[in-house]
Image 1 (spheres, rainbow, N blue to C red):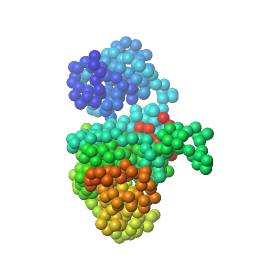
Image 2 (image 1 turned 45 degrees about the vertical axis):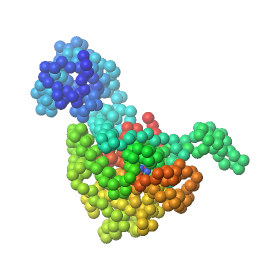
Image 3 (image 1 turned 180 degrees about the vertical axis):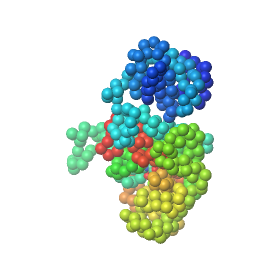
Image 4 (image 1 turned 30 degrees about the horizontal axis):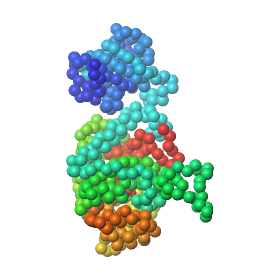
Length: 463
Ligand code: 4AD
Ligand code: MG
C-alpha cells in the first residue's frame, strides 16, 4: 500500500480509508483500555494521533518500545476523532518498529529544550516542533524564490564557489589551498609560492556570486544566483554566519530605482507565497516564538516600504535624543543599532536607504553625479537590520578603473570584469539577499544559527 504523508491525511484524510504512514513517535499516552501515540513524519507541525488497541498482535511488547524517537510504519483505518485537538485519527491494525530510542539516553524527551542545547545536537534537533517548522518554512522560501524569478524570465545561474577575486573587497575570505600546511613551498624571498598550489594562484571561497552574475546578465539580461557564500568575519552575532546562502539577481538595462522596485516586489511575493503554503507553521511562530510574526508578514505584504536617501537618514538619526554607541555623522557606516532605530522607531516599517557615501561601499557601485555618493541601496527591516544590499553597477570603463585603483585593487586582476565595460556595456543593477536573515525575519527566530541546519560560525563546524 502506498504510504501517505501525514500533512495530506490531516488535511484530506476521510474516515473509512485504509492507510499506511511512517515516521517517528513524538509522544505516548497509555490508558487502561487502549493507548495513543502521536507520529510525526516531518510533513506537518502536527502529528497523526494513532490509537492502539490491546487486540493488536504483541500489544504489550510493542507499546513498551513505542517511546519518543522510535521509528515506525503503521497501517490501519482512518476514523473520526472524538478528541478536540484533531479531526481524524488512525486506528492501528499493524505496527512495524524500525528502530527504538532508549528513553534513558535519547535527548529529545518531552520537556522544552533551549535552542543553545539543541544546537549541540544538530543531528537530532530537526525532529523538534520549532526546528521542523523552521526548515519547512526555509524550504517554502527557497521554492518561492525560484518561482518568483522563473515566472519573470530570470535564468538561474551557478556561480563558482572557489574564486580568485574578492567581490566585496573586505578581505573576509577563507583561503582554499591544497598545500601540506606543515611544508608550504616558499619562493627565494621566503614568501608563499602559490604557483605550486592546486590552482597556481591564491584561491578563496566566494563571498558573493555578483561579479560572475554580471557576466551572465551581460548575455541573458535577467539572471539570479542562489548558492552558498562564505565570510570569515569574526562577528559572533545573532545575525552572522561564516557560511550562508545568498540570492543575487542581476538585471541588465536597469537602474537603482528599478532595482529597489524589484527587491520590494520580491520580498512581498516571497512572504505571500510562504504564508499561503505554511499557515500552521506561521501560527506556531506567532504563538511560541515571536508574537509579531503575523503582523510583520502583513506589513511586508501590504504596506509600501519607506525610501530614504542616506543623507536624510543621517539627519533623521541626528534629530533623535536616542544615545547611540557609534555617534551619528555623515560618512558613518550605519551600524545595526542605527539600522534598527530607523525602521523600528522612525519609520515603523522596512526602509530602503539609498545613495551611500562612496568610501563605505564596494568598488563596483556606480558613482553619482555629486561624486561623493554611490547608487547603492540597503533594505533594513525591524529586529534584523540589513536584509538586502544592492546597487547599480558602474558601467563606465574609465570611472570603474579609477574606483578599482582608488581601493588599492589591481586593474589587471579584474581584466575580465573590465571587458564587460569595454564590449557592449549596459547600465545594470542587482542585489543580494541574505537567505538566512530572510528566514530569521519571517519566523521571528532570535538567532541565525537556528534557521540553517548546520551552522558554521567562528570556532564551530561540528556535524
Ligand atoms: O551587503 P552584501 O555584502 O552584498 C553583497 O555581497 C553584494 N555582492 C550583493 C549584490 O549586490 N549582488 O551582502 C548581501 C546580504 C546582506 O544584506 C545580508 O543580508 C547578507 O547578505 N549577509 C550575511 N548573512 C549572514 N551572515 C553573514 N555573515 C552575512 N553577510 C552578509
Ligand atoms: Mg551590505
